[in-house]
Image 1 (spheres, helix red, strand yellow):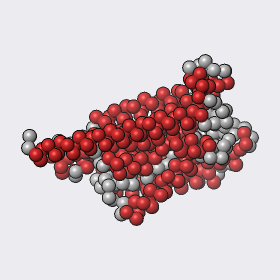
Image 2 (tube, helix red, strand yellow; image 1 turned 45 degrees about the vertical axis):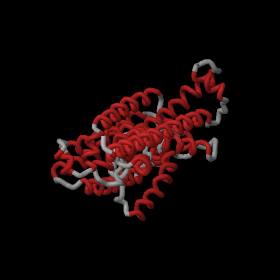
Image 3 (cartoon, one colour; image 1 turned 60 degrees about the vertical axis):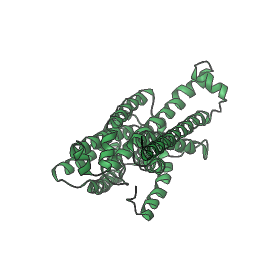
Image 4 (cartoon, helix red, strand yellow; image 1 turned 180 degrees about the vertical axis):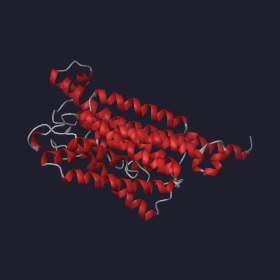
Length: 355
């Protein structure tokens, strides 16, 4: 082995060690955030009470708080953050656009329109005579309609990309146009809604990690795990596409087909998550960019790191929403939006395209 080869091997091992350390730190932060989230809430539980409740050995009230409220909420935050973070990383890679995200592609806005349609037109959203005691009387119909709205936005973009041969960069512009269209349609529905229906629509669009139970958690988990495995299996395709379409094609990657399939997988994953928990902005945008600052564009490391960073950001955002003015729980969508706005400004002043 020559001196140059030894130097390259040493640099590679140092880089690998640094990347592993970043993942370990993310894991520790995620574990600490989960532990803190277990303690956050109006029912003050000690670590002993938490451990007993997890094992089902505490009081009936503590067991119920832990297994019916806090653990499903934490698992929803972690799984949804993983799904949004990893889909954001893939979308930004295959579309060659640092602003690509389920929000900028109109998927979240499509879900909002579907939910508004279910609540206002189909009467699935309200139970009670005032906004003070409103509740969703048919949450599954709202979920189905929100999922349908998300998928419709995705299908429109895919159809345009397939038959009009638009560039990957232009797909994001199509998403912005679709976002405006769905937002306008939702506004029209709200105009004809009564006070309680309008409050229900607004409440849904806020985003809420507490509306899921273990059944919904299992559905999200299955979708996210399958998506993550698929993305990790195709990680070398993303690395090849990062070097340019011609380079990827010379390495045997069908760029056009890979882009369409991956966009469809991202859309389905985001649609499932958003349909259950509402609109959560910017997690898929923020997490990959943060990890690129530490790991670069190697998707072997970027994908798991973006997934873990998404989980950390969403879980910390939920904890902040629960404790900042406790016992009032702030909308998680508002908290995550505060994370996204500074990043947009950063990309604007840095030229956006530098990755």
